[in-house]
Figure 1: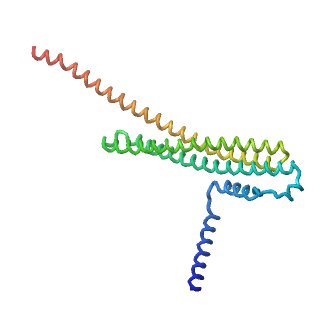
Figure 2 (figure 1 turned 90 degrees about the horizontal axis):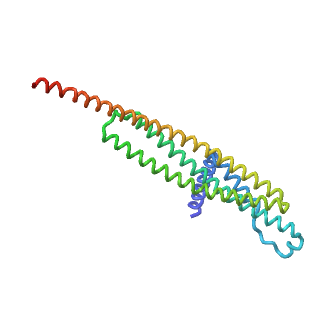
Figure 3 (figure 1 turned 60 degrees about the vertical axis):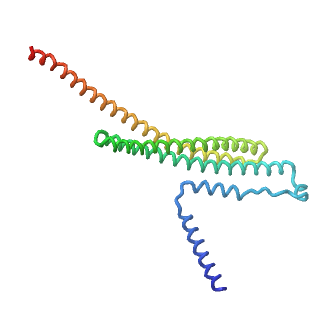
Length: 238
């Protein structure tokens, strides 16, 4: 029994070291946000103040401690919403690039494939558009929550400044700037992807119009040729 327990503990230790090593070597682009969130959560804790403690603290001290807890909670809220927004933006950008790739492939195959193959490609494109729209709605939803978190953090930072809790105020302002910088960078990537998609769609429309114009011109030429042949037939009959 002891030997079995020892073997189980050894396996558990190896598994823990393996997972810890994988996490420590992970290149997740949002790891710094996780470190910030964990650091802020570890610095402050809502510990009730006993009667003996409260007698040795002034009202100013108690207010500073309270406002520091408020900024800590606001910073944690901002960290979580920033992570969610960046993740949803990443998924949205991927969906946009997928649609760009599909539409470029379709444009390159236009006029070279059968109607059945064209319908199949269009079905895939439609599904990609639905996926992109869903990802965009998710991104908009998290953006709204993130803006609320930014506003809350700004109010917490101002409250900390007004009460003289300068370290808490500086930390909150730094956290806001980091969040805004990260989100701004991701939104710029999203705008670039949307611009590329618009270019591809304009190109597709231009190709379609060119093809339609060519078909119309061919039909008009055929109709004109048929109209010119009719009088000659009548002349031969006469």
